[in-house]
Amino acid sequence: MKNNLSKIRTERGISQEQLAKKLNVSQKTISSWEIGRTNPKPHQMQHIEDFFKIPKEKIFFAAFNYKYELNTNGTK
Image (tube, rainbow, N blue to C red):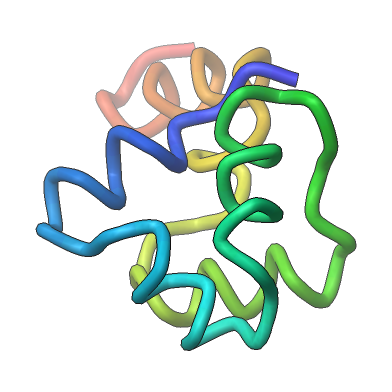
């Protein structure tokens, strides 16, 4: 699954290690999520959403991101 986690994390100046500590997972797990090798569990997605204050759909679901961006711009 292609996601925006790496982009959002680096834009906020947060290292993989810092995010891993916050989420109580390993740095390797964060890396695996970012490259799409594995996906976070739903409760982990919720923690990420809460941490970044960005809807998890915008972070993790590329197909939904397109629809989300269109809806927030006032179009279909």
